[in-house]
Image 1 (cartoon, rainbow, N blue to C red):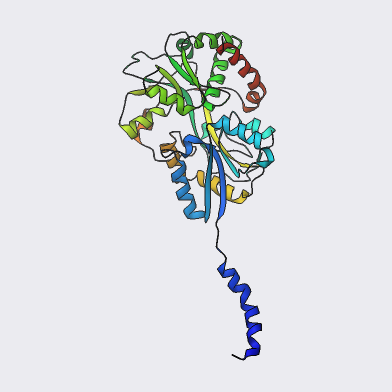
Image 2: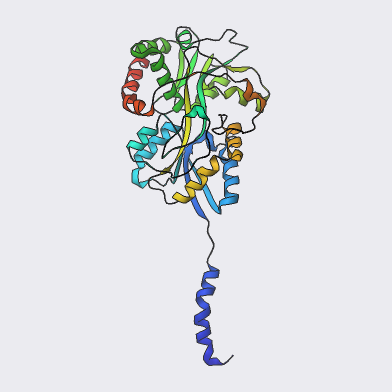
Amino acid sequence: MPRSLRPLLAALLLPLLTTLALPTSAAELRVYTYSSFVSDWGPGPALKQAFEQQCFCTLEFVSAEDGVSLLNRLRIEGANTRADLMLGLDDALTDIARSEALVQPHGLSLPPLRPELQWNDPAFVPYDFGYFAFVYNRESVTRPARSLKELIDSDARIIYQDPRTSTPGQGLLLWVKAVYGEQSEAAWQRLASHTLTVTKGWWEAYSLFLQGDADYVLSYSTSPAYHSVTEQDERYRTALFSEGHIAQIEVAAISRYSQQPELARDFMRYLLTPEAQAIIATRNWMLPVIEGVTLPEAFDHLIQPRRIGFSPAEIARQRPAWIREWRRAASR
């Protein structure tokens, strides 16, 4: 090579060589969710593995204790949040998150959803649902309560969750208000007389129940399917109440401050595939939001509650007053 051409060739090749030498880093999608979702037995690890195989990205879960704790964290972080997508708020919290401008429209065309969801929301995408219910061990509770009023008027030992930090706890808040209306404070007082403890989150409450500390724990209509499928244990049942049950629809939404909105949309689309829905149903133990998902036979034996409750807008408007009412009654 003529010596005079070497500087020119080096100048031409250097940018290319520099580019080739740079490490290739995948985009990162940061998802805020609740702790049980990302536990070893939850759906998070399997969803992460499956999605990363198709997105050329890294999915990082950041967990809070519960859905309400997740919302509180997002409110505190505000514009400084590192969340690209939030996963684990429920339909009772959507208007609060929307009114505080924590989310942005998803812009997705969703596949057909199960009609009982009656879902039409520009920001939130449902990924599972279920009904709040009281779980009992049929070997120790041989005649379960048939209504919420019968349970509250009984002397059964109850564990439930704090409505300020837990979505199941908030579900019971709505349930009591829906059944008792203006008489709900008196109902809370009666319930307090035989409440063993009120925990911050669902997992703490359910663990105490499994230790045999209580007759009933507030959980989900789908909880017995977990015991049946994973433990071959048929002792656990949920009580079907004549007044109806509060439904919980869990949702995902793109953070207003997301650095990866397109990647967040891709993950939301994935959540609604049959593959992801089967993972969620059999690891988060909730119901799929689309039809045609193959489920274990145990799901066929779950109670079929009648849905009652309030609109997200009414919950957002009344929630502070209903929580104050609960605090007054529970602290007496």
